[in-house]
Image (cartoon, rainbow over all chains, first blue to last red; front, side, top):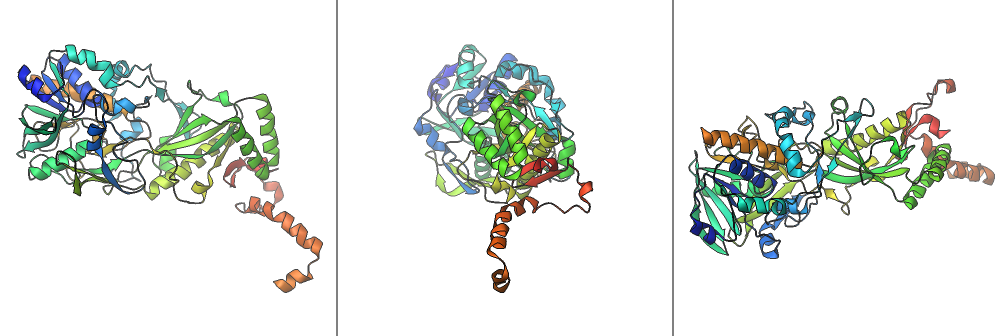
Length: 479
Length: 57
């Protein structure tokens, strides 16, 4: 059932067991799992069926530190959440992403990839994916990896009909949970805001916050402040260890044979380091994306090479005569080192229309990441040269330690961490089942729980974790 | 320095200036003890390019 207002929902007399906040990939997936298990669940969606400037305005905020996107641009507040502007890239975090790394503090998850693998079949159905191909080693240091460009499922569109027909699920639009109320053991209710005014307090046996990788932290920080620690009793890490995937053009490559690597429908290919290389160089994970260069750029590149290696350039220009595709731009996206200082705070001066403090995001890239960018490109360039697959030129600002450009992509719009999973209550907020430490009935869905980010886009892993949480909750409630 | 330059012929100065850009090629390369020991497969990084030493021939 889908209700356009909280008032309409209330009149229907639906009695939910579970309340999910947010209808993005995590919220919708968990609701479908619970609904399929016969558990009545309500999904409170702050926005409407369509985008509106009024709704989006609730997402305004401020960033302190490195340049970042406006916070009301980098996510969406309507049915389906940020899946509505998702590009569709899919890959699950690597096994090595779950493991602690001695050279990067606060890495490692309390679960392994094997814990989410049983759900990948469901994920493939939800995201409409073919099976993933195994990685292909290019050298001891570099592997070809597959990122699948999926149809970019818009969860609100794809599942609206199914949600509407499911008698166990009620989706309530235009209903914003401004605050959870807790007593240090349980969430006892949620304060609601609907149609521009307070809509009272809502109760359910279980609450799952799936409001996104920025908003989950904001909601719990504000709720905890209002409940004097009654919502997140162990709040040392709340809002902290926030991560993105910084993304920049890092250089170019001239390729001896472009078809040496399997490319996708867009003629793009992806490469990542092996764990051995990461350990040796003490760097984070990264992904290098090969994007075919336009012809004029290739000529400039060969002219540049001619100044350094004339014979090589001559050979390359012969290649150019024979092949249309022989050069690529290299985009690098990398894993951020988890840092407690990268955190979401509540603004002390700015509130939204419902009176909830807006986000102040503190975000900086670290020297370890800068080294990951440079050494990653060197690793890839060395592999291509050693195997005679091509030659790489690293952009000058990277080689010379210049500032990050501000006119580029900057990051992936991937909001991760803030409510990380773990066993240490000083460094995590939820346990391996995504339950808030010390609370009996409060769970968190989405990329907020990520301990590390790996190098790939998060939606596939978010959806797998949501399937896992949905199944776990079904079992907990059935007992 | 200026006395040194004044004693150089104009031809020598022009030849030195022409050779200057090429010096950057060798900035990051240690001089081999014996030219016979040069490894053509050695990976070198010059002007941002990651190359085999043999590429420089």
